[in-house]
Length: 134
Image 1 (tube, rainbow, N blue to C red):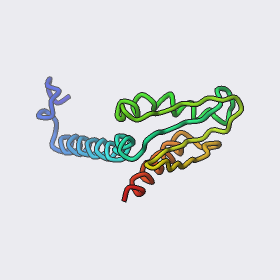
Image 2: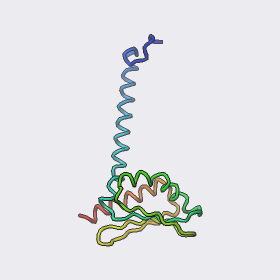
Image 3: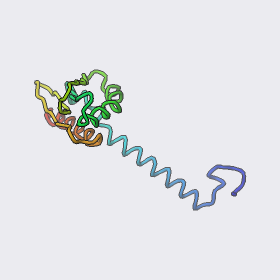
Image 4: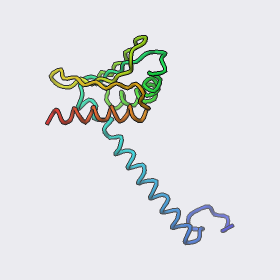
């Protein structure tokens, strides 16, 4: 259509600008995502221990099980020295517990939450640990 070359140099001016804008928006979105997830690398700095409690089979624990399956590896890779405990017990309500300095603990019930809401709950616990240090 515009010659044999598939490079940006062979595109008309308006398509070059559109291509630059798309790249710029893509970079900005990637940066925003990285910044939004930066707290995940701060778990060990703000927490002493993280515990997920859930039932192995109940529908109430499904989102928690899925969250752990999708996120455990990344969280552990970013925080290798932080104990991340997965506790399964038949019939238990899904919960997330964080232990901070001096044995202070905070728990959040996860029943009815989506994976996104569980991620937000974890972020809130991490940020709460930061404020406890101040």
